[in-house]
Length: 443
Image 1 (cartoon, rainbow, N blue to C red):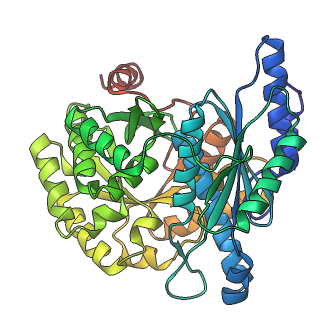
Image 2 (image 1 turned 180 degrees about the vertical axis):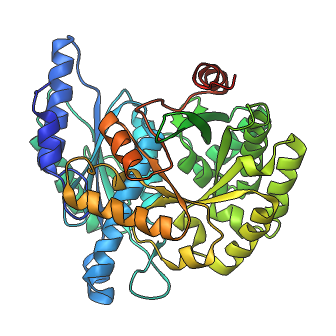
């Protein structure tokens, strides 16, 4: 692996999205290949290139500010998707304009890579808040995907993907296309996946992982975020985003959400009193009229003190009816439950959220902390967000903390808590119990 890989990645950041560019992606692929050669193996690299069809119409209709905001939102969605779905090493890059690259260095079946591409396309095509007016924007992605050949150069990979993507842009009805010409492969249909999910729920096969959270100033364990995972027998790991997308198509989001909430809240009720549980809330959850009553019932049944539960709400969950969402969350706040605005800084944030919602925390997206230790502009933005949050009497939680320098800086700047691979990766219930036992002075 080249010794200057980190420098290449850091020096090649896209100023708009914060992603690496083609040079950074090239360096990462070369590093994977060189490492595999030293180990006498072949790097199992899979790659896809996502392009936004007719993206220029967004700029023409709404202006460059709206177009830039949409690109930032797409970058954040791809990053979130990769972190949620990929277990090995990966890189996300902006290749110019509305083109993005996702490459992964992990074994993956052809069926799974296509399924991931289709799921990513669906995620990117979801509505994005319009920063220059009311309503939302919709983007229409096309994806070219491939499994790289043995020691195939990065430039050859980029070239084949770009050529295939251009062909896909010219066609209608073909959202995902393989470089080798295949349009589709034998696999699980949407209906089969939905049936698989219902069976998995019945057999209690949806796993809950816990991402530990720490106080920034003294590194004390303060709780964990609950994350859903599903190990599909054919497709492998399916993360929370894709899992809920499948549930939404099957009209079983409520069943899946209640299953996850009930299991996680029941587990948290056995944690020592100061440790908190964070649960993610989906757009479909907030759309249900009795959402607040359901959450309150789950908390009461488990015997968990309401003030030890935090609900994390993303911008995506608020796009449909902000006022109704605020009312539902307000009823839960009256019970003592706390509310966090999740992924803050990922894409466009409507500051009206900060005025209307009964918030306790801002949870910063990892893109807001990536460059704070070496980029003065990133640090200035970070400080501005903290100043605003403190003025609103909101605590700030930083996500994606991976270095000790980042932790020390966020603590010095007044960040309340953090989570990230610096201290721990997501772990199953048994692992978290052991982790809590060894990291909490209260046990």
